[in-house]
Image 1 (tube, rainbow, N blue to C red):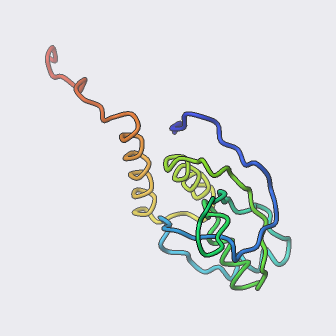
Image 2: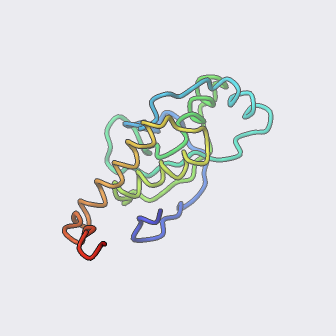
Length: 147
């Protein structure tokens, strides 16, 4: 599933204050039990940093928006009680399509999303692609010539 126009990579990996992370609307509704995840993080550390993008001029002291890793964020904040977390920091100029794509790629390889959550997220990506490229018109399947 290749949908991006440019390659996107984090600017840096850094430990950031959890209080500066805005958790906006997320497609994953069912977070599941994070106790086992928290125990794993306590035992071996946070192997995969969360993903955030920089925010510019956002009120309330938020410097970052969560892109992926809400379960890891919850485990570190709520179960372990840490004030900081390691994050891959992406640039502020990510498009809505790039943000959704990062969320999808992260979640496909992690705790399985519910069927409807994955469908809704893929639909979000499709809608954003249609806004950028326009919807396909014509060129559908023709039954002419079939015997």
